[in-house]
Image (cartoon, rainbow, N blue to C red; front, top):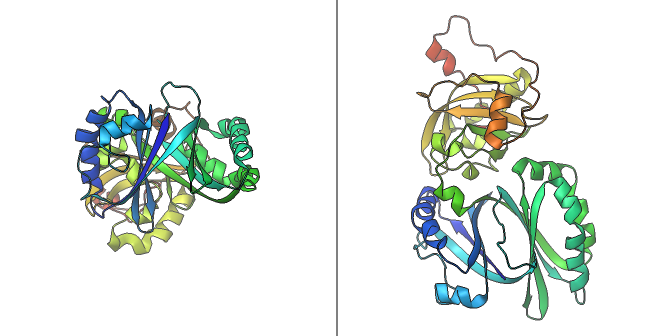
Length: 359
């Protein structure tokens, strides 16, 4: 089995067009290829823009050549050169899992650990990854895939961890997850660690439904998004993750973000109308209802809807549980909604300078 890793950067403003081509052309074409065992596309926000990752597993190298015409050529027949730049393609022998069945890469977030192994340390480095499975599963990892290749006489490894949800990874990082890789660091000369928010072909091909919920941490940074977000804002929630609420606040209101965010955390609740600045430069107006410390302490939820959609009056804890497929949390004690000036008209109340917890 072969693991294929393709990286690149999405040109500014081309996020929507890339997703359109993946959804309408690339995904329907690729799912029909027998030698392709799995495929997922990932995104992460970096200082230089939106990084793009394509992960796939294949039965063997020859099947990739048959599909693409060469190992250094794209397997996606839809032209992407005008929306993605700096493409780099790598191939690894899939060491684990060792079976020849379907290799599941389908998860909301995938962490990518790459390393160059120290001389004569191949077995011990692979052993560290294998013995870490139990601890990683307890932390929220549902699958680990390990690839290996030789480059100029040195072994390079790539370890992919598929996480159950983004909040599990967030919690793991906060609890000092770097300690887990201390033994691994002794076996390698260099290593890097990145995480990508992923969208599988099935996710692209199946219409999105359900509540539109965004989650943010105490700093206002997005850490999770439900699939229903796309139906409201027009782009998958994955493209908003790793940004802060302030990052998607239109320019005229950015200066007031810190104060407004602090006010939300103190009040515990806010609701109203809000303009979101999307990655492609466009804006969308949404209605939001936000609560602090839902679904858990330090995580803050915002329910989004279009202005003309009917209001969902259920508890936000129950809506979040439905959106993410979790057991409903115990609803926190009610706290007052942020104050609105007496006598304000309804439209004026909706337009108060508040910041939604996650959108």
